[in-house]
Length: 124
Image (cartoon, rainbow, N blue to C red):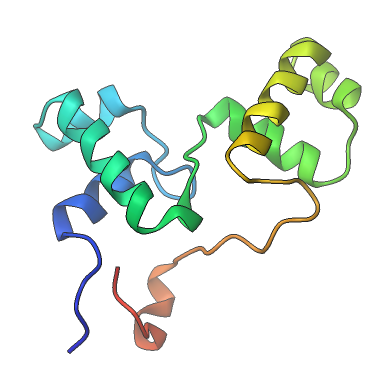
C-alpha cells in the first residue's frame, strides 16, 4: 500500500478550497468543515510545501481570468469580458508569474476526477 503524502483531512480541505473542486474561500471551507479559518490556512500552507504543483489556489474570479488568458485572449480583452481594468488583470498575471505559473507555456494542470479511481498510482 502506498503511503499518503497528505492526511485525509488535508485532502478534504484541499478539495473544498481548490478551484478545480468546490472552489470555496478559506472562510467558507472552514465553516463547512467545522474548523477554524486558521486551521484551513495552515493546512493549505503545509500542502503547498508538499505538493506545489497543485498551487496556487485561485478564487472563482481569478479562475475566470486565468481561463480566458490561457485561451489566448489579451489583457484588454479579458478586462472587458470580466468588467475590470487591464491593470487588475496585469496584476493578476504578475502574481501568477511570481508563483511560477506562466500562461500558454505551463505544464498541464494535474486534475482528478472520480472516474480515475481505478488508475490512481500515487495517493497524496
